[in-house]
Image 1 (cartoon, rainbow, N blue to C red):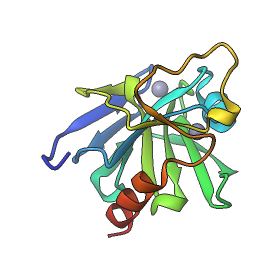
Image 2 (image 1 turned 135 degrees about the vertical axis):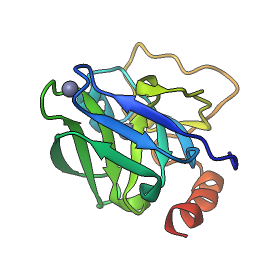
Image 3 (image 1 turned 135 degrees about the horizontal axis):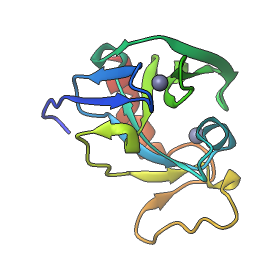
Length: 150
Ligand SMILES: [Zn+2]
Ligand SMILES: [Zn+2]
């Protein structure tokens, strides 16, 4: 987690590219309705990066929604092919949450499954990993907030 890495993400058509110049701060599997609606997936494997490590090439379609915390989340998709590519999270100092499946090179290592209260019925969470009904576990929040806001 401390070693700087460089990864990128592309939309389906290639018009939109994210460049990320740091390791993720946290990684979650999120089961919330917002993420599922945004991606059309039963859950989202998301890596969260500090905003100052992220940049984007191409035209973005963005939609602002109210997050569970009352802070805004901005869903960002390619303006051309509409691939959902990242979410800007105001509650985390504008951190970018990117679906791990779009990142390359990247190794997804989730720390918890979150928002299981909104989980799709047919999704089974593997044993041996933290899970919470809503927000991430307190010890993870306590560790990540100073990093995002520092
Ligand atoms: Zn595209
Ligand atoms: Zn979510």
